[in-house]
Image 1 (cartoon, one colour):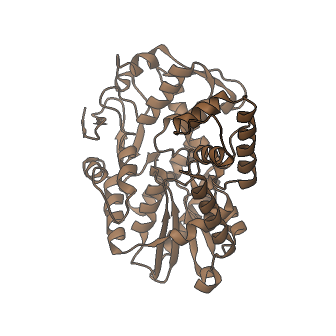
Image 2 (cartoon, rainbow, N blue to C red):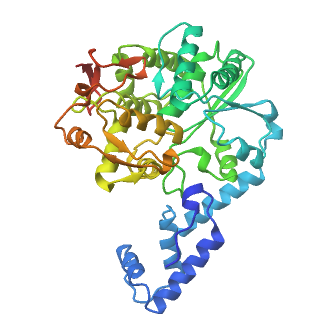
Length: 413
């Protein structure tokens, strides 16, 4: 049978291809060459034995993530209309600053017809120290982490920080901001950081925030979407008010604290002003050492990938993690590499690496200690892991450590 449509990744359904697939499926059914398709149709309540094009169109629509073929058509028409009639000029959109936690949508925004300025704030606050320090010291700590974790030179680190600091410093009551965010902790912490930096509610403050897109099989990020989908998202933006700013300031302080108690409370609470914040904080809280094994959730998932698939190239481990294991994908490839190094370079490693070729091509496998820890027979904190930080919480060998239960309860070990 022909492969499913590629729009399951970028979100822009290719109607001609989908129509052709439905016709090919119908022909295969009539030629008695598609018993598997026949079984799927029976499971949908279409017993046959004779089938029509509408039946296979329904099946194709369901493969693409829609309840019916007419709903798929309606979705495509809404996207096309949004792309043809964005209405940017009438709303003076050239004055808008589009804020994003990376540069993954800037080019697509231009293709889609957006004319405002683009502001990137890509400090990955899901990793490394995010301490409650005075401004100059805070930036120095973040810069040192970026240089160490991602191999940046001091000059590159300073240039990146200078751009971010200038962008934050220019925010005022006259600013016009639209923030583009997803549901994961990387994006939600970016959102909190920007909102907490606002000296007052600006003249315009709007949020485009999504956790899924119709027709996309595995939504990971806005950057995977076709340009027309960005125009489709545009009318879905909503204004933010003082309640969102107050929540962001409270969250930013809680995340930077050396005691994660208040952070855990915020993670367990629904927040109407920022509805995706609570689940993201709860997921990020699981980066603290697990109560039972001392592993962060990401470390645990990496070991699980290797335990279930055997030796793999590092890049393939990353692919499995992002596509099948991680509940709220947030890692970039360099972030994953930095995290993997902690498991490889530890005095008692949990992952063994064959050091040849580029890092993403190097085969890695779980060690015997990794298997024991994954099975609950040992605790990583008892084996001298390297110092690491989660927000303002430092986890270091020989010190009492904040740990988290699966239910999100925190305590000292």
